[in-house]
Image (cartoon, rainbow, N blue to C red; front, side):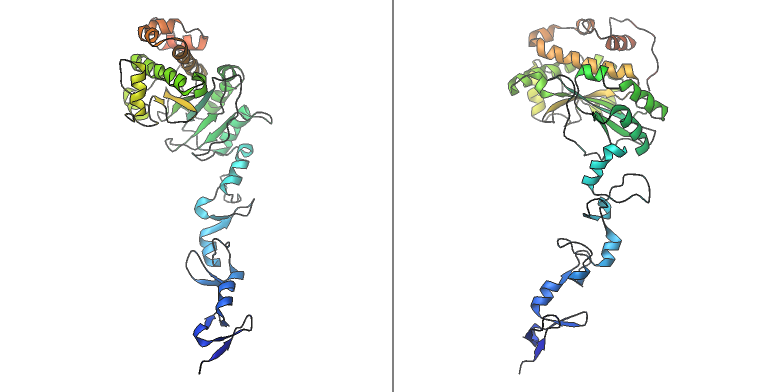
Length: 371
């Protein structure tokens, strides 16, 4: 004769073949399903009311205490490995990635490497420049980052943000939103930022770990993809033809460029170099002109600097190269010498720097040390 049991929870009767006992209670299959769950971490069965996690990630209290917490702002369940903190402080509240990002700009914290906010455009386009300046040796310090953010940003304008960069020893990366050249030179407080970074103990050129990367919007090179490609091809040709001069301008060694900003290789025609690049015969984004981004091309040759004149000169050089690529034909570009190119450079910061590097009609001048 089949033995009949009564469920401790709902009072239903059921045969012994369906009997389940948990935590001293006899449960029918329905109550066992609705009132208990398995801990997703250790696999033990727990009462649903004792679930320290969520319906998607049930947890016993012991596993929650060992491996999880909740975001202080929004309550999201977080593995301890995914927790962010606004301050370098044991008492700082745990935050999820989204809440951390929302508060980071105001608090001056340093975002993770993959942080990429919606771009804000400053100045008149379509030629916009985005700068990534790496600084090192002064600490990956949120309070230092906050000082630089305060110099550049205000309640109306959020011009820069700071990011972690794994290639640095003890620093971070300063990243701007897209800006016109005029905005960079006359409204973006680069000189104050450089001086403040130096006063806090940072270096860039001297650190030997830092780069200065300049992004230019693809829309600056034409309305169609074909127009853009032809201008970009002329930029690649310019780099190959004048590689030695650009190497000298960059302040990097040949070995550093081979590792971080490799050349594509000379071809007789500009489009041949671009076709070569598009077929993947290069170092991915670690190319002198990185073409892997959808909306920008990235000039990666420059060594980092905290000397304002050098930073301004790098922006002005890129602007001049863009002019050459846009307004000269392939044949005119091929016929142009470096002396002709340099002789047409007019911005005072660029002319000063070209003279310092002995790239301006061999006219050397006295120069201050790089930082």
